[in-house]
Image 1 (tube, helix red, strand yellow):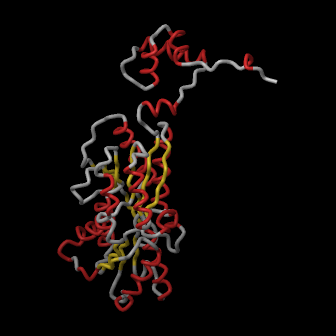
Image 2 (tube, one colour; image 1 turned 135 degrees about the horizontal axis):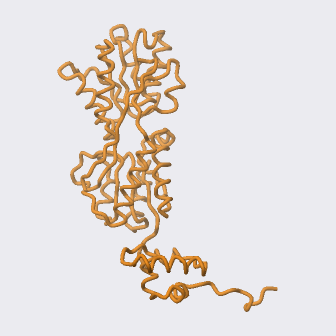
Length: 342
């Protein structure tokens, strides 16, 4: 039987202060990461913590600081298949890695219906998290408005055209990447191109479309664009079906992402066309599936894990009190990956 007397007393912050020969307030400032602790005192406090085996009460510290040590990543999806796309899962993993190393727990909330959007809005209004990462947020959705008055740090995953959303963003150079791969097609002699655009609700989709337009310049024709409903393979298949009557004249499909490009490639094969001999196809993202197709997919590489990490790092800067301009944008580079489809 263990008696009360046999139970050792848990060391307190006052025990640490006494052993280190400093005040209670100095130890408290040290534990909270304050810069107002001398190097000498910090060394003595660290030694005292090790000697006493003091373990800070993180729950109490968070309550005192009105912090939850929680960050919410909110992803808006039109299709549940979007969640398992490599670009999304890699970004989520990257953000979680950075935030976890800093002592934060990242929660993922999925807005895929009006009901879920209402629930998330209620959570945001209750200040349940210290900060928010907004992923794949629609330009015209009410969910974005929920963060306008939260008073908490917010970082977006995409450039926004909405001037009333004061959130800094980390994004890829989508416009430049799509422009470069379109020029790559033109340089290969592919002059009769069709662009398969992503869904209209996505800022990324619209930015990539602008890149296609930039590359074609005055040669751009609106009839060259197929507007997909989502980012999925089926949309690529439907694009090829839509242009089936013109396939003898078309010599290339430039696609807004790899899933769409794989759909185009598969449907062209069913129609009996050879890729790239008859028609070339390019994607965007450099997902793992890009090397599983036959032929392997020429695409635009983006480092999705670095995307999430950069979002997490920017949010941490804001959580530490650093000033970040509301319309600051960090653009990450893209790179053409040449394979056999173009």
